[in-house]
Image (cartoon, rainbow, N blue to C red; front, side):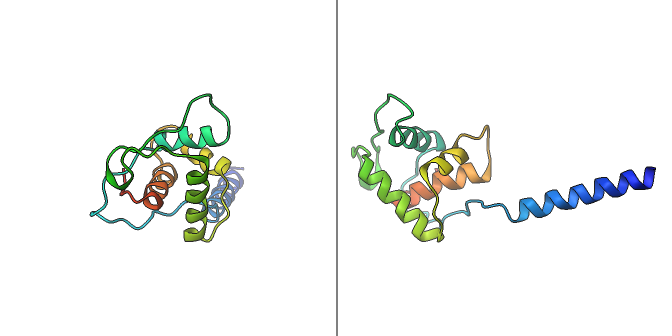
Length: 126
């Protein structure tokens, strides 16, 4: 009985590892120290929620860097999503990326999603 239970646990563990290995994730964008600091996952989460009509708030405006004072728009957000998908060879939607940004605490996907938006907007990592 004990050997059978250990075997079942081992098979379940291997199945979980295989599922995680093939799960779609967001790789880190190329980083350049010469770019101004980027914006947090919360900044981009809010703007995706605005784009999807999930909040009554308005778009954020950039502070500092090449877009200082420019307020995000639907067209800018759509362009950023297209640039991210082109760079990654993916077809992410705003809803999928919002899912990554809504995770609690720190995660690589949450950080990398924000940093991809930063990268395509001309900013460095947050």
